[in-house]
View 1 (cartoon, rainbow, N blue to C red):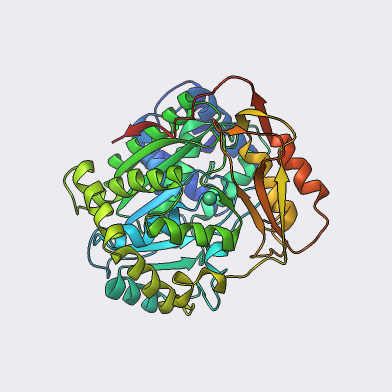
View 2 (view 1 turned 60 degrees about the horizontal axis):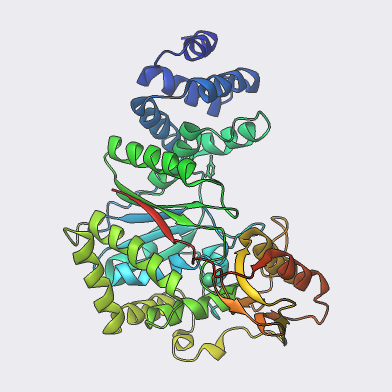
Length: 433
Ligand code: URA
Ligand code: CA
């Protein structure tokens, strides 16, 4: 096989075979195929697209390009959840204990935050003593014993994706549905998922700006999941404004605990119910989404989800007492209100900008090397659709510095007002099952 022939075949709109796709990915991963040929190939895919079968083959070739986590020693269907990234998105912290309490084993590999979006591991590390460095044996045992464990990214997972993503970034080929979908799904499959639930974000703060693009990506990923034997469901959810009220690591842990107690923000709670229902269904613990939702409501009500969360914290070296006393979480030195300069209904609250404001405080990383401050962040008091009077606080800034000019300026810039009532933003615009 010659790479040039495969580039021409794709360029002319033909379908590549399983073996041909494997040849491209294996050759590129081990350096036999050069960047210039791969660049031409990616551009051909960008313009000619891929069939569902080609997408599934590309995903599996990428998943098999490096280490793969073997979770077969864990009983049951291992369900993973993936979000395409957001601001104040605390869902993983809530969903883990929630679906584990319904009997679905959660063996999750998570990452750290970068830029305006946060990471689950950073949030968990806000709990004193909590660590994510578990041996594979301990990881598997913990899931078998208590249904929930989270580890950091380790090993050489999907090297093909790492190399391809870097190349796409500089060749104008990031924004291609088959390439994005295979990139995301290959990582989930390599991490050992038997079933996958996807939260595809749309709006100003998201990768996919319009619901139509988000829907196309969600369908592509569900198609890949089903073609590769992993039951997959997806939703499209709004990320034009932050999710919940809290943005910042310890602040989001507190918000997650409140949500597990049934006292969380309405949008975060609803998102967790919808994603959790899908996880319980693809995990084989309920027949219908309605039945699954009733199970989730029950484990919040009877405290079982919170118990699982406590056990999980203790298992990974953290102090489970934080669940009953959130003042044990890192506390910021200063709290400062952000009084509204205008009166009216909030019509817009830009997620990106608020995420960046929290990053400037130290809640997030500007670069991979940045050190974050787990105590700091922003708690919103208003969301799109709410009425605000002049002087009323729209947010509280939690900081370890009194120098807040840049942060508060960003918060002010992120909010727009109108004099007429505006509709609340629809949180979930589609379910793809
Ligand atoms: N996220 C990914 O993991 N891969 C992409 O290609 C785009 C977003
Ligand atoms: Ca939040």
